[in-house]
Length: 313
Ligand SMILES: [Fe+2]
Image (cartoon, rainbow, N blue to C red; front, top):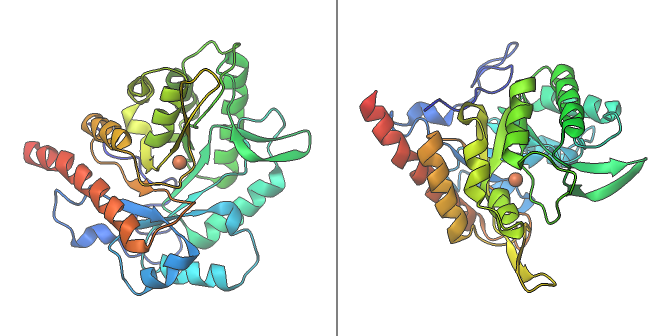
């Protein structure tokens, strides 16, 4: 087992230029110290979180919601940042796109990361813009040599510009490309190997894509280099049927984490050891205690694999 990926260029709990930030792991016992569990920040949960109404270890925010010069949302996040580490999650870089990366977008990301000094920054292996047109979706790429070279070039550029190691997230997908010559897990593993980037394993995405394409979701998890995985996402999906009557899962982040995804997560932890885990919820958002309850379950699952490791150490 290898420990979770260290946070980019900045040391945990501290910065090159400023004082150390609060680290929730300080007050935990040795078996719990490796287990971290967070929730995606929703506007309606900000005040209860500021009041300490839920015991979560970190918060995740979407970068593109924060690309403004100021205002109450940024001020509120600065106050939360004093209490909890942040993970900043980008959805707009279009790393899988054919066009060069948007340098203005990278500049805005750089300013955001400097301001909030998140412990993790992640983006998707997907594309969302082409020919100057932006699509409100994260679309899959073909897994072939040409795409691999282009994605690696883009990841190199992002890491150079942001001066940090990023985490690249496996996507959920509903279609595949006939021209693909590599399995998804092998493709992502090769991106990590060539660029040195970390990985964000979205277990729900792995399950959704596996079911939609008739593959074993474990094949993706198993192919990823364990030492590169710095964060895990868990979320809920919706279920439909395709034209052939087969199961079609939609990654809608609008339901509790499914039982099958919990099982896949626990199997992944048995391979990986504890990995900081985030509960994603973007639709039909429940009260904070409900999300915190799912985060508690994820923390307990990590502690269950951390305890034997501590005993063996
Ligand atoms: Fe995700």
